[in-house]
Length: 87
Image (cartoon, rainbow, N blue to C red):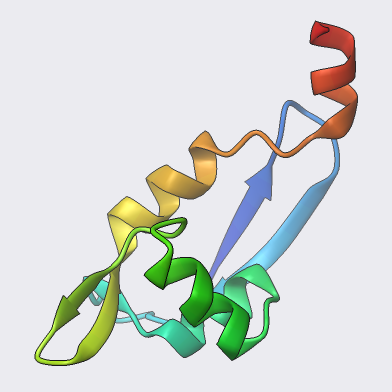
């Protein structure tokens, strides 16, 4: 059974995503990150290579540390309404 995480942003819309590692693994695969972000696999690799998503390359394989990924996700400010109000 997978853990469920809830992502909220400033008490606005709430979305729910399934955390694929019910066993508490320390890393996500690129495919898992793509699913969590609802991005294509190619687009996710491109974002990782560009440094937009926190990841490490170990022996030619990309891994995404779970805690760093969620800290990065929490720090993202992608709400256009809030940016408009701040201007």
